[in-house]
Length: 276
Image (cartoon, rainbow, N blue to C red):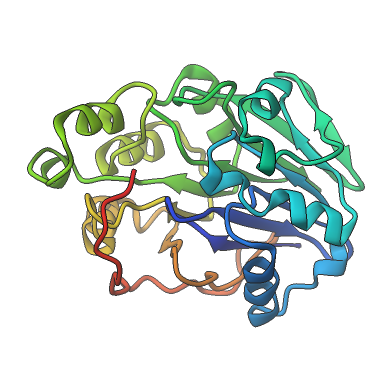
């Protein structure tokens, strides 16, 4: 069995947990170490099981807490060399472990597959995490779904998938034109419609659940994201990954009949300042 949880998801910070009974890893640490540990405790997730942290790219909402977390828990931090070089010096971990595209990284019983993708960063990656014939994907910050992303998404039993913006809200919103174009570009973010197309056309019959992730607070709503995905709701469970609190823990097993249900209700957004 695997337990998965979105510790934080949004442009104010990202962190995703994947673990079994003895080992766990995190993908990204874009909020403080204190907040990561508090949110894990709230969901009864044991930080002593953490064995590694994987960083998708150098933007602070994915890297902010990594250095302190690595020191405090004495776990390795995996990132590409270009990601390290592209990061602010005060955010760089002291002893990173570098990986390359197509490399498979073993962490106890887990195999982690870096997935090269398109985003406005030095060397961006998503990750597919495999354990005991179960596969979990963390796919956010993607301008468009390239063939590499589609291939790895098609292998997943569970996904944290970006559904960043609603087209009408973005183009009719208050962002300056250059920022609208950046968000919607091939190195920006996935829209609700793009995420729907990826799920509709490139997932397999073994996909159990999708956490809609990295949802913009200015250019999207939980309600719009869920409504876009509604035609897919009979194929797999769909939930929201929040920027304000950890999601419910989803239990993923080879037997689809034994898993914790995840909430499907929109949550109220609180902040009002623009962000990418």
